[in-house]
Length: 145
Image (cartoon, rainbow, N blue to C red; front, side, top):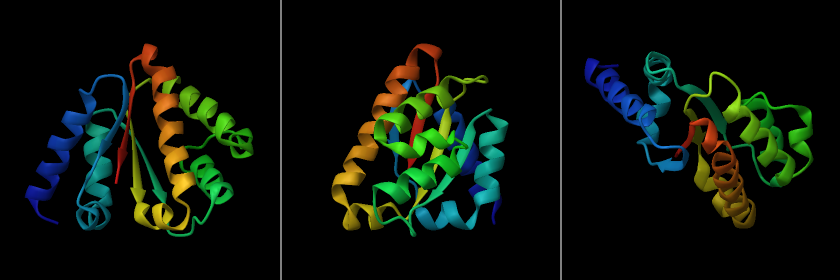
C-alpha cells in the first residue's frame, strides 16, 4: 500500500465527516477499498467515523440481507424480522452516542442488484428512512459501493 492510498482515504474520511445529516451514496474503487481495508479503517478512526463492512456475495434475498445487516452493524436480533424493524434498528444505531457519521462499505453490491432487484431497492429505502429519522441527532449514513 502506498502513502498516496492512505492520503486518499484520509481525504475521503474528512469529506464524509463533514457531510450533512441524511443518507449519502459514494462510489469507491472496489479494488482499492478491499485491498486496503486497514487504511480505510484507520482513516475512518482518525475522523471519528464508524465503519461497518457488509459482504453481499453470500446474500441472495431479503432474509440473508437482514441477517448480514444485523451482524455488520451489531443490531439487535429483532432487526432480522423485516425491513420495518431493520429501519428502526438502523435509525437507533445512528442515533446512539457517539452519534457520528457511519460508513457502510458494501462489498459486491451488484450481485444483490442482479439477484433480487426489489430487495436492493427496498434496502436503499431502508437506509434513506433510517438516516432521515436519525438526522435530528446529526449523523449521516454513507453507503460506499
